[in-house]
Image (cartoon, rainbow, N blue to C red; front, side, top):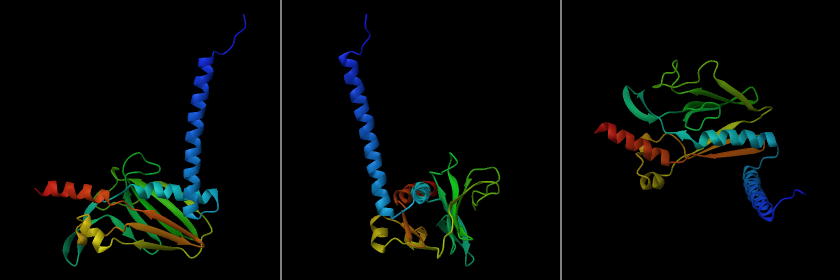
Amino acid sequence: MKKAFTLVEVLITIVLLTLLLSTAMFAFKFFIKRLDTMSLSLPKDAMAYEYLNHSIEGLYFYPINIKKNFKTVNQYFFQTTDNSLTYITTTPIYYKTISVAKIQYDNHKLYYYESELYHKNQDYKNPKILKNSYSQILKKEIENFKINYILYQTKEIVEQNIPKKDVNIPKKIELLFDDNRWIFSVYANNIKYIFAIQSKDEL
């Protein structure tokens, strides 16, 4: 007696293969489209960009109190220097919980650091990158590094009911180096979530 596939089995196999190929083609086209918008030439650059984009997309508007001119000011945690930025992310690369992330340019290299926000050694009121935390070199041999921040416009702040004095986080972040321009978007829906929490605590 010869063994063979039935027509139903063949059809099911064809349908499954078609679905898998369609998904793969969609993912490939989406990735190619992202490469075009990023103006990236090397696969390593594309991977480095995706790492940062994943982290920055989850940028969390983490409220803290700081002392400024002998007054207590409510702000969101977002620290910057000429060569670095530190923020809180809900979509970390290495850890599974909300974390402190830092992008830093040093000695012609672009570094990414990550520490858990609720680690036993972390000061949650003044978060920082802890020793022996996750670190990775994203890109080497970088020249002419610069960070640009695109801020919210007054109209956008009014439309989204954002208290202007509290917004110290930009809506877009640009990393410029050599002939590259990496642009990352920060989504304002996190702001409304935090404001809701603050309003509830104040009641």
